[in-house]
Image (tube, rainbow, N blue to C red):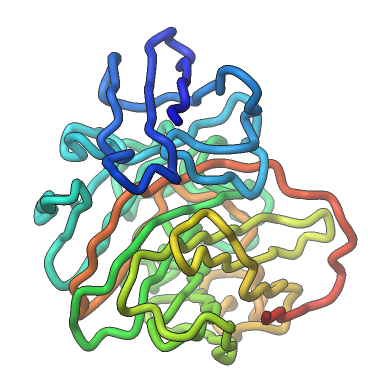
Length: 313
C-alpha cells in the first residue's frame, strides 16, 4: 500500500506503507522542493492519522504550524537540520553518525539563529514572553525517531526541548531543557535542566518490552503546556517497529522539581514553559542507526492533569 500526500505548495509526496517490510518505504519518491511542508493526507486518512513516513501521529498537529520531516534522500540539503556533518547513509537507507549525536532541528524561523544572543535569559521574563527567539519557536511538540543499536557503552537516546544554546553561556541559563530519555536496558525517565550542566532526574521506570538492542524500535517524546501553567512530559515506545505505540511513562512538572532557577531570575523550581528555536536528538558513546526523524508542533489535549504521575505498563 502507498500513501499520497499533497503539500501546501501543491508538490506531491508518495510514501510507501509503514507495513511494507519488503522495503524501502523510507526511499519514497518526492517530486518537489527538498524541504518538507505540512502535508494534507489524501483519501480516507486525516492529518492526525499518519505522517509522511507512515508513522502514526499521537496528537493532532496545530493548524498552520511547521512540521519537520528528515529528508531521507539527502538530509544535508535540509536547511532546518544541523550538526549533521558526520551523517553516513547505510545500505538499507537508514543513517549513522559516528559514536555521538547532537542532531538538532530549527524551528520555522529559527534557521541559523545566533546562539547565545537572546533578548533575555531571565526565567521570569521568559515565562511571561513564552519563547526564546520567535513566537513560532518549538513549544508543544511531538518528536519521533526510529532507532537500532549497533554497539557502544552509552546508555540510551535523549530527545530534548526548550533549550536555546546547550552551553555554559549566560550562567548556563540558555541550556534550560526537558530531556525525555529511553535506555537500552528496558527503562526510561525524564530529566530537567535549569542551568547547564546540572540535571534533575526522575527515577528510572521499567516497561514490559525488555532490552532494545537487537531490533528496530520507535521512540516518541511529547512535551506540552497545561492550562494550569504546568508542563507534561510523555515517553512513547513502538517496541517492535510495527507502529503499535505504548505510553511507557509520563510526568507533570507542577513545581517542586529543581532548585537552580534563581540563578536565572526565576523561582528555584522554575517550570520551563517557553518555546525554543531548536530541538535535539542526542546520544553519546553509541553506534546507532536511525531513520524517519520528525518534529511537529501539536495541539495539547484538554484534560484534568493537576497531579504529578508516573505510568508504567
